[in-house]
Structure formats: C-alpha cells, structure tokens
Length: 249
Ligand code: HEC
Ligand code: HEC
Image (cartoon, rainbow, N blue to C red):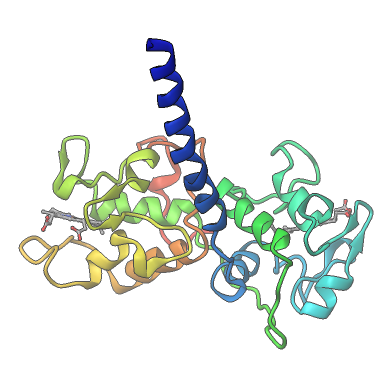
C-alpha cells in the first residue's frame, strides 16, 4: 500500500515536472543583436577588429566582413554552431591563454556576456542588414565601482542596506529586490540601480551626494555593455580598483 502510494506520488510529481521543463526550454529568449550583441562587441572587440585595426585579419564591424573572417583557429562565425565559431571559443579561453579575447583587457567578458554570444550564434547569428559596428569606449568595472563607493555605499552596504539594496559585493548587487532586478545586464531600463537615480521618489529625502550626470551616464552605459563585474573582485573595498577615478583607462 505504502509502496503504491509512493509510486503514485512519484508519477504525479514527474507528470507535473515534465511540462514545466519543456516550457522552460522554449522560454529561452531570442537574443536581440542590436540591443545585446552590438554594444558587447563594440565595447570589447571592435577597437582591435574594426576598420582602424584588424588584428589576425579579423573584422567585426560589418556583417559581410564578420561572416567572411577566418583565422588560424577557423571561422569567426558559423551560424548555429557556437563551438565552431572562434568569436565564441576565443572569448571563453582561460585568462592565461595567449589567445583569450578580448586580448590584454583587464575586464574579461563575464559568463553572462559569453552566454549571450553563444546563444546568439546558436540561434542562427542573425545580424540585421545594414547594421554596422563602431568602436565605443568600454566602461570598466573600476568606473562603476568608484561611483558606487563614492556615492552609494554609505547607505547600501553591510552596515546600512537601505531598501534592502547592497552594492558593496557582487552577489548582493545582482540580487533582485521587490521592484525587480537591481542590475540586469544589457538592460538599464530594467535595472533599479539605474532607474532609482532618475525616478524622483526613491532618493528624494536623501539624494546621493557627489553624483554627477556623467556618473549616471557611466552606470547606464556600464549596464548596457553587460555590467561586467569580474569574479575576482567580489567586494568593493580598499584594495579594489574602486579608488581609480572615472574615465581612467
Ligand atoms: C587589444 C586588442 C584586442 C582586442 C580588444 C580583441 N582582440 Fe581578438 N585578436 C587580437 C590580436 C592581436 C589577435 C591575433 C593574435 C595572433 O594571431 O596571435 C587576435 C585574434 C583574434 C581571433 C583569431 C583567432 C585565430 O587565430 O583564429 C579571434 C577569433 C578574436 N581575436 C576574437 C576577438 C573577440 C571576439 C574579441 C572581443 C571579445 C576580441 N578578439 C578582442 C587583439 C584583440
Ligand atoms: C543617503 C542614503 C542613500 C544613498 C547615498 C543612496 N541611496 Fe539608494 N536608497 C536609499 C533609500 C532610503 C532607499 C529605499 C527607498 C524606498 O524604499 O522607498 C534606496 C533605494 C535604492 C534602490 C532600490 C530601488 C527602488 O526602486 O526601491 C536602489 C537600486 C538604490 N537605492 C540605488 C542607489 C544607488 C545606485 C546609489 C548611489 C548612486 C544610491 N542608491 C545612494 C538611500 C540611499
């Protein structure tokens, strides 16, 4: 009797779980080239693989050139096959590999960013006609960290986590609050860390001091490029690069 019950229960649980998993799989979002992939490549790759400089003979600035590019390791983009596309495989090489891309960049791509590259290629590497890429300045984590340290940590760290928000460490900073994700990579409009600075009600009583329009623009652009917060800098502290000034390269 007990055995039958357990079996019945197991069957019931399985029956419930199966469709749920199927739904989850089909829910994988279609990656939007213009919103996600373009700013990522423009900020991390185009300065070395664009019109001015094209190391290894690879160019990423137009669709035609990107799809025709071929290096020692193979083709840059093979639609549907991320593991055969060096655009993806070189960006997931270990940091100490001499071909790990972006080369000599102190902020390597994050897992979220390389996942977007992988999914985009897997979904067919759609690149709308006529969309070209230009080099844009990367907003390094050190810049975001220095804004947080200067203007936010007073109220958003361990000692005082106003609104339940902490920005002094990576894990808490990315955790969502009741009003949605604090930091949603690639999507400033959905990240309260940005929207709270432009919506009047949140910081009315005690606006963050020393925060300039330029700082807000940096935070927005940092999120748009993918909100890189390196794994080895989990905390914003005295020995982090947070002491550097915004704008430093
Ligand atoms: C600071 C300059 C620099 C940046 C930034 C950079 N690259 Fe490179 N890349 C190079 C150089 C230099 C080479 C040639 C290396 C060689 O041939 O030894 C190269 C080669 C490559 C190759 C060719 C590998 C092969 O031999 O087939 C790929 C693919 C590549 N880069 C992708 C990227 C991607 C994707 C990004 C951005 C995530 C990126 N690169 C950012 C400098 C850079
Ligand atoms: C003087 C204290 C203070 C400073 C400095 C401060 N905040 Fe806040 N922040 C608050 C308080 C209080 C709340 C909670 C407001 C509420 O619950 O209505 C809050 C809420 C938030 C939220 C939650 C969003 C929401 O809609 O509730 C975010 C995100 C946030 N702050 C980001 C920041 C950022 C980014 C900075 C620095 C640029 C910053 N804060 C600086 C006091 C501060």
